[in-house]
Image 1 (tube, one colour):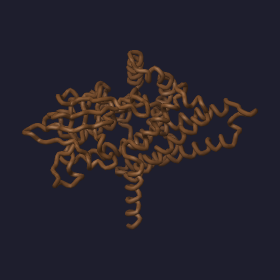
Image 2 (cartoon, rainbow, N blue to C red):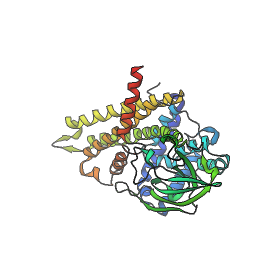
Image 3 (cartoon, helix red, strand yellow):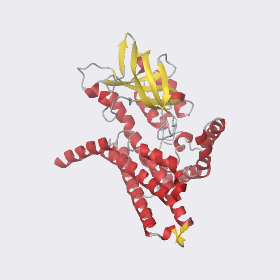
Image 4 (cartoon, rainbow, N blue to C red):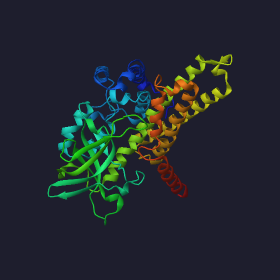
Length: 388
């Protein structure tokens, strides 16, 4: 495993880094504002990414992507993650869903959705969590799907279905088996086109004051063909793990980019701002922020590379992935928090990206499983391994 960027991916990484720092980051104010100008800017950036060979680099080659191995993709996704818009304008936002669809969908849905999704012509969405059920224990999910002839009839309510308003379809996790089935074999995933009668968006749910496209959706006798089942019946948790496992390391990669950007802003501020007759960089407590941030970023980066290497070698890497999910989420939160502290009042404003980055960083300790669940399950696995 190489801690430095390998020569084989260095030029591509440099190109993505330049794209992010010279085009995406300067456009964030417009992109965040929404509206026609934002849409036009978004479309233009995506067109530029495609024309420059920077589009969908992490998607498998057989479905139209760049086909980068996990370990190589870490270096790309790290710089792509400098902005929340990076994965959207570079065509990797759909990576988890394209992998899942490619592996488990029927030929009909692979033909209908896969190529357009990788090309950025349509968007997917995913529905698992529910407002009245502990997300840490998905065996309690209440949304049901009952087979009626050759159709599934779905009833329930989901929330945090990201991108539902613009999505062509939602993959819904629901109970398809009776109470006699083991909890982890009682759920399935079903594809629901968003124009299906009974699929109703109730509201967009702001997260820490940001309208990030997270929706609460009601399923009222939604009928879809039996062939919309994704993978084998009762394998919902298996498929979810296949989706969420890589997703957690994708997050960790992007968090490195966010943290590095915050670190750069912090160091520049320390050199530029003076107080009590000397630069802030001369203050020992400020130097502590630099040291702690550098150490945490580098430690998280090494753990991320280790997890990616394990996945490339064919391992499920559950210990490695869960560890970096927890450590990475803490790291990005801590580094951004220190950068805000160094910037003082300016760090709290929208004059800088730090305020928005900080709110997203706080989400990281909850989505794709709260830290507490990952800590407990990982410790149990390690203890089993130590007992032999």
